[in-house]
Image 1 (cartoon, rainbow, N blue to C red):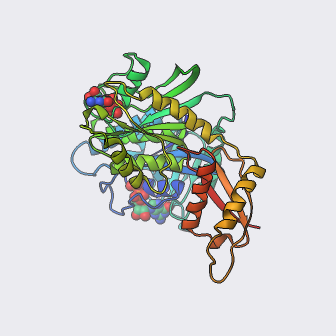
Image 2 (tube, rainbow, N blue to C red; image 1 turned 45 degrees about the vertical axis):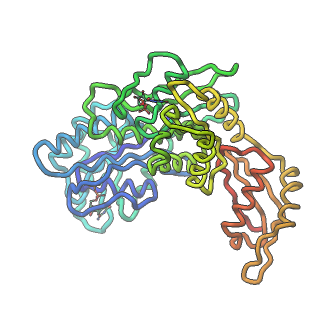
Image 3 (tube, rainbow, N blue to C red; image 1 turned 135 degrees about the vertical axis):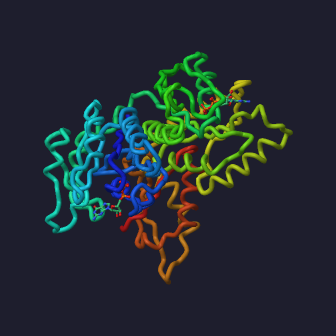
Length: 434
Ligand code: GDP
Ligand code: GDP
């Protein structure tokens, strides 16, 4: 499971600001006017090497009847479905309000942990009301913080981090393959095609399939786990938020996977939404195999595959060393092949190159094609080693690491890929002083 922090609370208490602090971004729109409509936000944060998903639940326009009720419902549902811990943000400057009490009443019924976070404790201002929030009946610890200047957030994260399990180190654990993609690209159908069961309900409407389920699957004489991201149970009134739920499921599935089958719609081509998911995968340093699905719907001639592949690779630059399959769930073309390839990609991710081999092959290539002189200085790469990380990372030790620029990094990455199979795997390069 991917550890998930859900941030709840009334409008304007500082949920977005806290989200920004925990994820290290300033992308959520923080607006001083209460309840301005905004996009709901989710992202990934890290604390002392442990990573987690953060969900900011705010964002319904504060007008009309029942808006508050709608907002609470959403927050509580989100907490119920997705949260490992809920941070219930209250406003220490304003003090306890009826709204806080209403939300607390609902949050008290949850099974997961809920921490009360008293925000805006950032001034020497004496008018800060921390103690009265004990009345909310949500435990003995209230965390005074300032989302804006960071006060107290370290203490809060320290407590949370204790609950975040270490990632499984077991070398023999089953490979986890996540089927990801935008709504309606054919994820559930593919799961059906693979498992031949009627357990996953396929539907024409975007995102209306059942809960995500891990499925142990036997293929090619091996067992693996299929992590499905399909949307939600039917019949619940999440209609406004299906996409949001889907996105969070996607990010969680990616984080818990070793390799992702990224499905796109052959008719639509690679969209911005597809690229956003692709970026989530590479940022998480997971393996990826691209499936151009619904290939049965495309009229083709003998050039189609090559032409299509070229367009895709151009759009995926600079990381385009990726297996691509043209699949169909109707004809079942290449679906199994793609899965088999995903298992190979998962093996590529575990590749460890002996230091001697790395230096013997790479140093002569570097000598023949050294980094361009920068500011009159020769750049000398002297020693190369693979770091002991889960996904491949290569360290180049040199005299002036800061002078190695992008084009040369790409040259080095290409040479690595020419000599060792890292297909489908992001490879990180580090340049260090020696
Ligand atoms: P949300 O509606 O709960 O997401 O609240 P926002 O994060 O949008 O913040 C609402 C307002 O409170 C904005 O004007 C923020 O600048 C302000 N705010 C948020 N956190 C703090 C804080 O720690 N200290 C102070 N003084 N203001 C804050
Ligand atoms: P999901 O939202 O990604 O899980 O997508 P679904 O599996 O629910 O599929 C959405 C729609 O696309 C359904 O109507 C499927 O029948 C259809 N579909 C899925 N895969 C294919 C395919 O390979 N070819 C064609 N022609 N239709 C497909």
